[in-house]
Length: 306
Image (cartoon, rainbow, N blue to C red; front, side, top):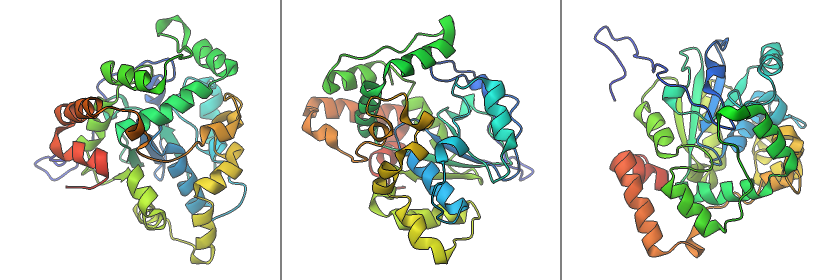
C-alpha cells in the first residue's frame, strides 16, 4: 500500500463509517482528545488484547506488582460505563495512556499522534476463545451489555450451541454473534506500512514472548529497565495473569461465571483441530483467501510476514 502522497506526506487513514453493535459504538472515538504519546491496542477480539495490554503496562511501569491493567486501559468504544464517566477517567490519567479498541480502521479515528498495535490470531482459534468467553457470561453481563445498547441493535443472548455449530454460525454469518471478522483483519493489513502501526500475531507472542516484548518496547520508544526485565517477563505470562486475573479483566471478572480466571482461559492454539472436519477447515481457508488475499491469509494463519 502506498502511504504517501506526491509531496511525501503520510496519507493518514480516514474514518468513513460508523459501526453500532450491542458491545460497541464507534462514534465514541469521534471527538476523542488524543495525546502525543497515546498507545492504542487493537484486535478483532480474543486475539491477545488483554495479553498485550498487560505487556504494555509492565513496560510502562517497569515490572511493578499491582498494575491494574483493566482500570488503566479501558475499551474506548465499549458502551459501558457511560461515556462521560469513561472519558473523565481517561483524561484524568497522568501516566502514558494505553487504550483498547476492537474496531476496523475505517470505523476508527486514526491519529498521527498515537502509536497503534494491532494483534491478530487465526480465526479458528479466535472462535474457540470467543466460545468460552460467551459461555462464561453471567446474568450481569447480559444486563449491562444489552441495557447499554438499547433497542437500536440486536441484543446478545446466551448460546446453547456446541462449539462446532458455534464455529459454523460464526463463519456463515461473518463473526456472529460478535462483529465482522474478515473486514477487521483486512482493514489493518491494508495499512500495515503506516509509520505509527505495529502488527503483532498471537503465535509470535506464544513462540517468543521475551523477544516480542522487546520489539514492542522499541516500537513504543519505551526504554527497557534491564534491572526489572525478569519481572516484566514474569508478569506478562499467562500463569501470572491468571493468578492476578482481577487486575487485568474488565470489572474484575464480575460479569463471568467463575470470575476473572474464566476470562483468562487457556491461551492455546489449534484446539479446533479436534473438532473441525477437513471440509470445515478447507472452507475456512478458502474464505480467508477470498477475503484477505494470499499474503494476509498466510500471515493470519501462521504469523509469518511475506
